[in-house]
Length: 215
Figure 1: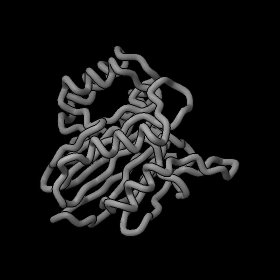
Figure 2 (figure 1 turned 120 degrees about the vertical axis):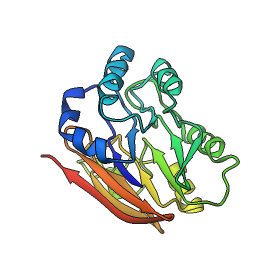
Figure 3 (figure 1 turned 180 degrees about the vertical axis):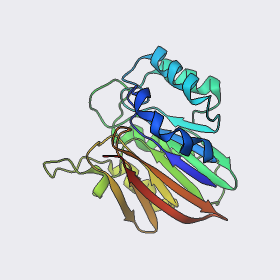
């Protein structure tokens, strides 16, 4: 299974154009939060454009997204916020939103932990990928320019407990790269205007994981 991951589009549909050939060749496209800055019509336009290239999409909301946007992605069959979807023997577990920040789709640590508990409920012991807009605490992927780390301890706790193959994240635009927590790879490719990530999972194992920069 070949995957392309694009977090933090923020409605910049024009910035997705260089990725269209890669999207068409992927088995799965993951939009890991902040699809827009809260505008439903922009989200609808984005999916109209994407549907010219793929309908193999999974999404979670970011802090800037809204209930209306989540309802739209749910109607399309793309939303995995608070649940999981099994594709080719891999469970994709979704936790959207972020710790309190700009936007209204924000949660406390306790609420994030509850969302992940709900999302994981009933999941058998099969390989999984965590898709979390909020990065885990104390990684390359939650470090601000000034050095402060603003990730979630509850997301890190989940990763330490369940050891997903990969945690795809976003939210912190400058915290680009791949880190590890135990056996889990943590990957933030940055916002759409800076790059994207690709991964290949075969028989429950990560065969490739890369961050691609366009700047």
